[in-house]
Length: 390
Image 1 (cartoon, rainbow, N blue to C red):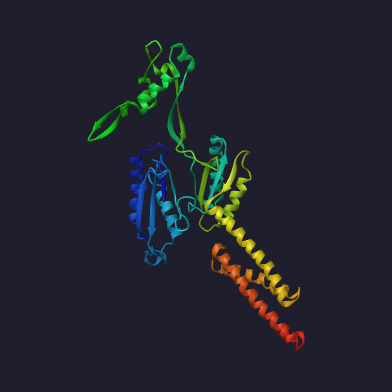
Image 2 (cartoon, helix red, strand yellow; image 1 turned 120 degrees about the vertical axis):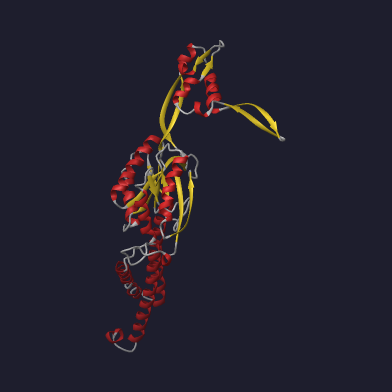
């Protein structure tokens, strides 16, 4: 469970916000244990906190009032999502299913892709539009991007004309800012057999906002000191928490969970439909579980096709006929219809596991069909066709 507070929040504020989530989680009888971390894992994410939650086995979970059985993991994710979102200080809450994925290349999100392009501003605008279309589709929840614009940043630009009139060089401006705000090494001191750098800069209270630039003075080429504000332009703007790239392109990662009762295939098709309307210079590339899903299903479809072709070739040599293999393979479509009917009756989806089961079922049906055709051919040697079939 990932909680985000407003961009610019302090680490202490994020910690207080997460404690509310911890209080809620500890009251849930379904939880076995949890681990909390404040501040993120990629640096600069002071408005991000994580909770890694381990649930009890389904048989050990309490049965809520009005229900016959305990909450499943997917139902609990919905419970947590609905409870955490309204909490004070929570900007957004994202849930990841770590039972099917983890951190790193595979985030555990069934919907994951990157928007790649050259211009950050355009990528940010496009990612917001894509995110809204995904949410409006009703097929996806927990839609999130790593384009977090909002961290305040002060940018100081030299005013070259004003600096030249006052005899101030650009290097002098840079040195003054570095010494007062960034800190400058001016010497060393020794203690206990170790040598330590001595760095000087403004105290913390004098380097917190744009107005603190007024406290800086810079020396010109005549030895005079001049207020820095007279030779620079100060701008305050919102900037990114972090900049990410993939395959040498600037990239914004978009992730989402499939909405309860919806299909991952339908959700991915919707994302592809959205991707076809992207502006020039921006492309959509699937990654993580979404990429694996597409590749795996394409591989399974190819396996079925090749299996039918190879089966026809082998049966043709065994029966020494072009017609009998066709009679054997005619039974395969009925295995598909029977499997789909079983999935519908059992309220199950056509996923990776059921697809593998379908391939196995087709093999069993083909084997049974071979036995029937071969037995019939043997009987036809001693009796008419109808009696042989019966």
